Length: 249
Length: 197
Image (cartoon, rainbow over all chains, first blue to last red; front, side):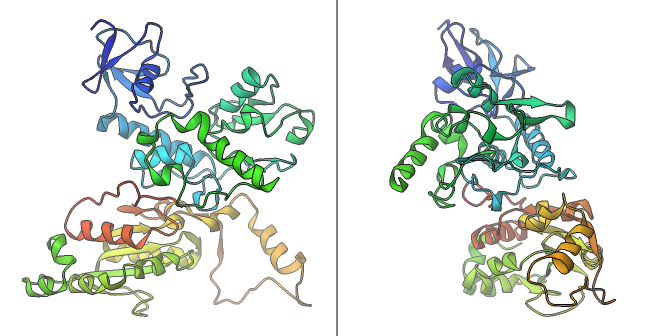
């Protein structure tokens, strides 16, 4: 076979132009990731998908698949690095899972489970990030932002609204809302926007549906993220919310 | 060390040649005792556990200071000066220290005050808040430990050997963790037992 590569020793077919991540996802293989989403162009920022290709580190979401590549993915070496990246994300924000309504549906949490992260290890930043509850239908909980820019991309590319952006540099980077006041209520953002359901963590939350599915019965409570893969990301969350909204309406 | 089958079976555990019992101390610092309640959720498994361990300082025994121990279980983060002293006492006496539950691991709910000024919080709660009795004042009894400016996870104060997250970790998770540890293994929690919520 020409158009295939080896992922942890397993042959993965690809079509020319696909990235290693796209080919692996198409084949149902899980490469850990946070900022990558099948519906959007690669961002390459979270580095969770770092694999070794021919012995060299590379982000699977940005490297084109090519015939004969030997890709290491779920090795203890790489998972240990991923665990460290996750720990850095956990201490940079305020990730208090017990009081987060995204718990159990959160890709950051589920990926940390998958990597066996037991402690954030580093000293916590405990940053001060006020929430924005101004919008009638959607809450912005900036404490949990990992700056994957999925909402930025979704709002710009799908919704055509450009509601979100990242501002600042380095540890001062943060998500902002593009309105004069900086408040979400003063944009044309709607809870039906793609950007409203693309957040992998608990920043963009639809109001009044948070506990429609109880903790313990949620996506990653039932199955590890390596088994759920990308299946859930485009459909599951909005479906659950729509059903609830119909009931409530 | 005892095999896990023995832990699950009281009769064979007591019949087996009994090594010295491991000494276990437990404490709740800035926690809600939920992790201790969850510890009791191991239910009747506490009987085979007691074949292997005996409790030193713990809310279960009401012993006030811990002596030399094999295992220390710390619930809760560090929010005041007394927490620091107790945590250091545990570290000085326990061969292995385990952070038990979300608050010990990352500060948890009490740490959600960390972005606020302590003085502002005390003013608000005791002086300017709603529904206060006339003459309410910030408590200043010398017996009260002074609060720290921020709540810290225990690993920011002393070295911690193992972490068992969860709010609380389930009885099954605590059981799995302790039995694996007592068997001399590096405890590993799989999907379903590892939870941060």
